[in-house]
Length: 143
Length: 409
Image 1 (cartoon, chains in turn orange, brown):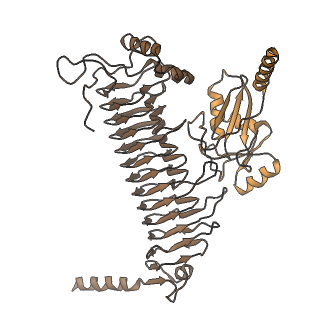
Image 2 (image 1 turned 90 degrees about the horizontal axis):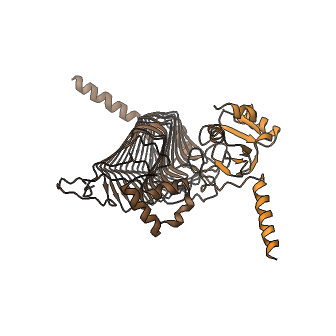
Image 3 (image 1 turned 180 degrees about the vertical axis):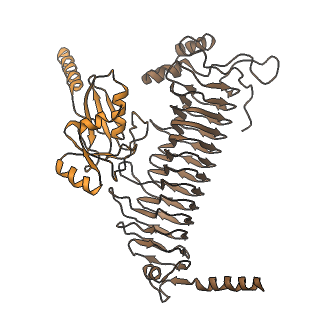
């Protein structure tokens, strides 16, 4: 009986380590791991997971990219960004559609917004006078 | 004779400016009507009552005065008062229920690209943003009471939000329940004086990219964190109270990437950390009181050339903490209540240097869960031996002239 329980715990631990699901950001409670500000806006937040399974949360995409660039030794597993239209919902950065600049007002002046579809990207790009951009461009914009 | 002509001319000017009174018992019933009639230099007096007129836009140089706090209700739809003229005075209104949105920022009062505007003695209640100054110069925000009811999960704007402005005076306001009490972004040469910013969700006061400002004699109590000064130069911080800013990521004062500033005569009481510094350089911290905080100061290894002189450290769990072994800051002539040295020549200065960094503070900085061992016998023993012969803590982290008595601050 005890061995079964132990195996179960071990298995659970293993599974939870390998998971690639983002942890939800707690608005007004969690703080940004790069700029130390309390995350107060569910439109611009971001999160990254390292290969070891550690989570880092950010209040701005720029913070996440700068954080990732400043710790080059750590292997990262995945990047997530908040969907601009759905309050505090994280979507994978690789598949997200970005716009940059214009009237976007993000907490640390990264001024990037992410959308889950290209249609929304075009619509809000026009509304906010912002330029469309891609994840690789965003990631390579910072040293 | 010449004088008389001048005086006559002056009276002509005065008689040109008219006063329009708005109210139920007056010919002019609505504010918008009065605004349409007004010309530059006029005064509009609004008498007591509730005015639901949507977005009111003031685009003439007028004085807009409320008598017995008339209520301007935005009905949760619109921005209440927009100012688009120089030299406008807004006084004595109660402004409630502005719209609530995410794309644009509806406000109680918003000033667009103007100078010499003054906003005084208003009550703002339940607005998304309270007062918003955008691209303004030489303006005054005084004695307003600003309140909102932001919940933890909800998006809420700032109390007084200033963006790309210069020479502002923010005086004597009371702000609570907003995201940041006062927010400065790209604001220069401004002063924040005698405000009370309590129980806001994020910060009491927040600086971003704002140089050459000062904040004096304010109270920041019970906010998510007291004050954050970030990416800024030349800020003077005098006589402020930072109290009861508790929480996991809360600080009395958060300094990040700031330089050439002066922190003088403040009181940090009962915060998680009194001051947290990161990437901070050439700052003087003088004559402050650090009382009953979890950590008096956290100075990260990325800080350089800071001077910490003549402060009182009383009743903190840890006085100082840091995360590296590099010390490029100086500590001199502070009073530390944990100092156990002696003073044989009676000059008021301890004869043995004091190491303010306790071993345990360093351990928990790298490994927070080690906190569970705090106040255990072994740790106390290690701490004591570390004080005599530093091995893990940086040995140049030292106050050579610790004071025997606390400074009368």
